[in-house]
Length: 240
Image (cartoon, rainbow, N blue to C red; front, side):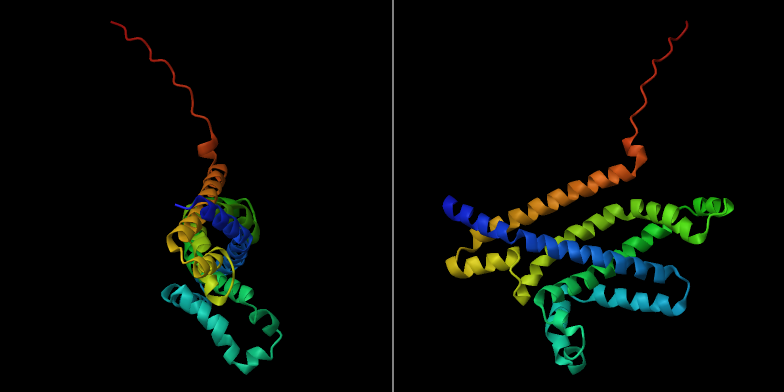
């Protein structure tokens, strides 16, 4: 195995690391806001909002992300109304098309995770807050949402890891993130295994660090895990 080539490949792929992280972070943050809106629409009790949210989740969970990227990047430019709109300077850029596709895709999955977290909040705590005279928005901000985040964080962490791996599809629309740079190196050197081993190692390192951060955040949000265990009390001697 050529150690010098592996080192050179590693340096080249590390140079693409900021773009990969930027794509993932932007899509996750924007997708979280959209996912929360979708989850609240599902739980609003308003039939129109409920069915629109259901339709959104059905479409974006039921179609491949690659197809969604192609439709946004190549499909939107086919409409004159889009090309002449104020959004065209943004939508003609591969970066923002990738962010848009990743955001819309992760929102479909994350909305169901958030919805399950909201449904898991004990109703008794909400009733107790109402009995104390707290308004609805304060109850949601101080009780419902924090408890829902605590419950949904493990599953949402899995979705975040999946989104980091999904950024590799952005190379299809000419973005030079880790996979895009890896494909360019392969086309120049024809050394597939070495390049993808290095690329896979980088993705593995990113997701390992992300998983550890999520575990630390989960532990911080769960007071029961931070509380030290009580000291064992000695057993009383049996009397004969």
